[in-house]
Amino acid sequence: MFSSLARQAVRQSSKRVIPLVGNAVNNTTAPVAARAFATGSFPAPKLFDYETVTANLTVADAIESVEAAFGALARGNVDVPMPMHIGIDESAVAGPGDCHIKGGYVSGTPTFTVKLACVSFYKNAELGLPPGSGIFIVVNAVTGAPLGVFQENRFMTDLRTGAAGAVSMKHCSLPSQDVVGFIGCGAIARNMARAAAAVRPIKGVAFGLAGAEEFAAEMEAELGMPFTVASSAKELCAKADVIFTQTPGSSPVLELEWLTNPNGVTIIASGSDQPTKQEIPNDVLKASKYISDLTKQTSKVGELRGAIQAGAMTESDVYAELGDIVNGTKPGREGNEIIVVDLTGTGAQDAAIGQVAWDKLSTL
Image 1 (tube, helix red, strand yellow):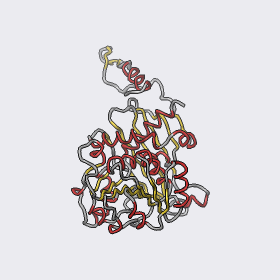
Image 2: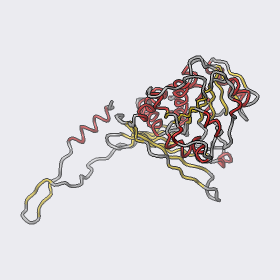
Image 3: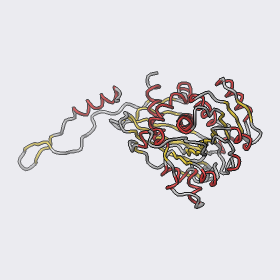
Image 4: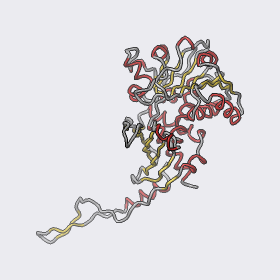
C-alpha cells in the first residue's frame, strides 16, 4: 500500500507539462519529446542516528515483514542483485576490512533499500571503535528520492538476521522442540535468542570461546527463560533440538557424529557471508535437508559454497529455499532428519527491515 508521500509524488508527476519547442524554419511551435528540466528539488533525506535506531527497533518488529519478504522472494516478486564486496587490503593508510553492499525491492511496496555494511576493520580497536559500521538508505519507490539514512552500524542487519532465524525456527522445527543451542555468543546470538523466544518459550544452551556465561545470564534475565552454559560444542549438540551458529571464524563449529538427538536437529547457520567462512562441515551439509535463504547467493558465499567446491554437493541437492517453506510449497520438518538452514542475508530482508524502520521512525 502506498504511503501518503508516495501518493503525493504520483499526483505531482501527473501534472508535468510537455515543453513547446520552436521550429526555426516556419516559426511554429509544437509539443515534442524532450528532456524535462527540474523545476524543484527533492527534500533532503532524514538522518536517523544510531541512538534513535537502537532505541526504537526490535527483532519482534522485523519478524513478520521478513517472513513476508522470504515468501515474496520465492514467488519471484523481489528484485535482489548479488551482493557487492569491496576488500580493503591492509596498508599504511588503510585496512584491513571488508565492505558489503546489498539491497532489494519487494514488489508492491512503497520503498526500496540499499545497505552499506563495513566489517572486520580490526584496527579500529586501537582507536576505541567497533570493527563494523553501516548505513541503510531507504528510497521512495515512486520518485527514486532517498527518504531516510539510518546510521545503524549493523544493528538493523543483526535485527533482520535474527528475524530470519525466527522464520527458520518457526517453519523448520516442531513446537515441541524447545531446547535451543547457541554456538557463538556475540551480538547476533543475542538477536537470535530474542527471535527464538518470539517463536516459542525456549530452554537456552550456550557455548562460545568467550562470553558464554555473560550471554546466558543476560538472556535469562531479559527473556525470563532458562539458559545454561555447555562445556563444549559437543555437549551442546547432544542436548539441543535447534542450534544457532553465528561465529566469525572459518573453521567448522560442530561435527556430524555429535548430532545424536533422536528427534532430529535443525541447524540455523548465519556465520558464513563471504567465501572465506564456513561453519558447517561438508558431511553435515550432505547428510542434511539443506535449505538456503537464496541459493544463487549461498552457492557463492554461504555454507553451500564449500560443499560444492569439495564435490560433496551441487545446487541440485538444495531441498528448498526458505521462502518455499514459508509459502507451503514444500514442507519443513517431516521426521527426525537433520535440517540445515543457510542464512547469508538477502537484499529482501534489507528491504523489509528498511520499510519497517521508515514506517516506525519517520513518524517520531
